[in-house]
Length: 286
Image (cartoon, rainbow, N blue to C red; front, side, top):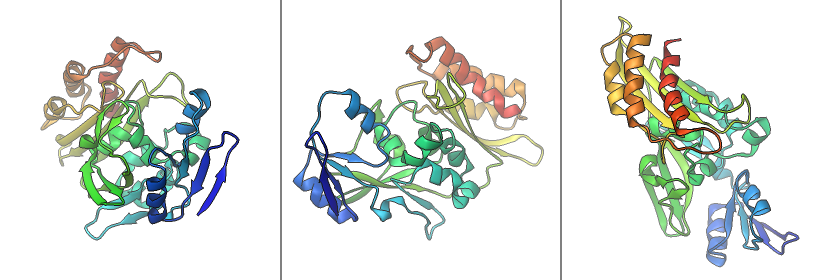
């Protein structure tokens, strides 16, 4: 473990094991945890002076591993970066929905630093990974010095910037159950620009098509159109047994627009988000 002090007299520590991390948390219970720092460093730079200790996670190899588990699930360490996720062959094969989402995060430099665990814990409605993780029924392993527990991501995120993480706990890994038989897995995102865009609205979609081309199963999850990721069972059910056509997707889009809860902010109006949320479904016919 390495420790140093910055110009603000803040202690910065680099534990190399999770046990070292927990010991440091007990010594500094109000410390910041930092993986890539793409959110935290901005907050520290532009917020009031903050001299709390910072514990950097980047040297804990256990937290960056991507492994296939015995039951066919895949484990992703919480500090795995989005560039690593986007390029990982196992994830590309099993969960292209997630690798597509990872490839849209910021620009290349941001993706090289930003971690999936940080994206989850920040709990922003516009976080690019969240719609894919909701749709994939991701489970989060939460660890502390006292032990560990596993929770569904939909239970973990309570609202904008709010999670069920307790003091002393970390998200240690994301577990994706097997996700097979889906003919189409696609992530779509609309922002105010083509690169480095924060989502005005995003959609994670998975479809199973029958031999005759009709929809056998559908799963959708929208980001940035409500306080948390939105699932719309009515829109999913509206496609079952029908061809994947503009007409059937239009019907599902109308049901989606009745379910979303968008807001006005500096990136878009609620009405625009309402329109985009429905229109993202129409891209599935392309």
